[in-house]
Image (cartoon, rainbow, N blue to C red):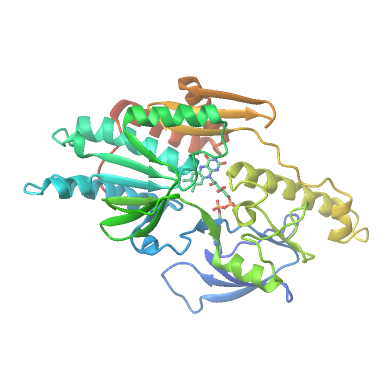
Amino acid sequence: MAFANDLLCWGQAECTDIDHKRNKIKCKAAGVVRGDTADFEVEYDQLVITVGAKPATFGIPGVAEHGFFLKEVQDARAIRNRIVDCLETASIPGQSPETKKRLLHFVIVGGGPTGVEFSAELHDFLRSDVAKKSFPDMDKECVRISLYEAMPQVLNMFEKQLVQYTEDKFKREGINVHTNTAVIEVGDTCLKTKRKEANEIEEVPYGMLVWVAGIRVQDVAEQFKKALGQQGRSIEINEYCRVKDTQNVWAIGDCTFGALPPTAQVASQQGKYLGRLFNNFAGSSPQALDMHSHCLSQEPFQFKNRGAFAYIGGSQAILQTGSSENPVVLGGHEAYFAYKAAYFSKLLGLRNRLMVGTDWFKTQVFGRDPSRV
Ligand SMILES: Cc1cc2nc3c(=O)[nH]c(=O)nc-3n(C[C@H](O)[C@H](O)[C@H](O)COP(=O)(O)OP(=O)(O)OC[C@H]3O[C@@H](n4cnc5c(N)ncnc54)[C@H](O)[C@@H]3O)c2cc1C
């Protein structure tokens, strides 16, 4: 990176290697169109690693081949197309009841906020838009959503009463929550599950499986960690967001998950912190400091937990804020309005706000669009 007004931009490219000893990164053009060259190197004074994370499959057979993930925009498009494909195929005359039941079984693996929110959104879509508008003849009894979680409860980071509130709501709505149950293998039409402390393995036919069971660091971050001899699951940083055992490499956001949760809230606070740290350094007298002594004159990073939300369907959400000793909790429609307001306020720029606001309005009035993209 370059300080002050000296901001340089390169074309869209992927960083393939970090050579911290030579202060260089290797990059490769990311597009499919090729010019004279695709590979290039960039020299840096200070490097900030913000490559995020990618889904972790934990080596479970079949997940990478048959599962859908929920990380990038193209993942969301693939999921949407698969849902519509399952609905369309189940509606072809002559399908056996077993095949229909399989195609209309939507499985989500991972009971964190992403898995819970996706289950809730999918339920809204299937019950409101699909059943009432696009596929009114669909046999509603065949449509099932199952959420699998290996731990004893979903939404581990929320207070017990909010977890109970969510599980009760899901039960009423017919979303099957299987806690203490691990998915141990995924085939193209059937998955295998095992309940904790039980020996039987259950085979479960399904139409679509969305895998949101965890994350791991990107390959480039993994290589970098190994080069530094770091053993943890993510890049280890110190209290100033500087990568341990380096002088001028920094890392923030999901590539450092572990001590702090991998959320936008953490990433954004770390980004602002590092921006201030660098700006203060740039403003100091040239002969004054190196970056190391500069850090020691600055406050370490401190995460301020502003609270957590999760959407649970039917225009309801759960909200937890306050300290861990004195949590403030709220569930229902009021929490949903607070959730929408909070996310709206975090959108960057008027254009985004207008576009997202218009989308929300269209969904409320006309429902979700079930066409393929
Ligand atoms: C479905 C979903 C819902 C979520 N909901 C919430 C929520 O409600 N609240 C919340 O706080 N958090 C939420 N999160 C988490 C939040 O999105 C992340 O914590 C946050 O985006 C992390 O920011 P980041 O900058 O570290 O990584 P990212 O936002 O993932 O950005 C990393 C960027 O680096 C790029 N990149 C990766 N590798 C390379 C490379 N080798 N070279 C060049 N570029 C590279 C990627 O393309 C990406 O653009 C959600 C996440 C998901 C997946």
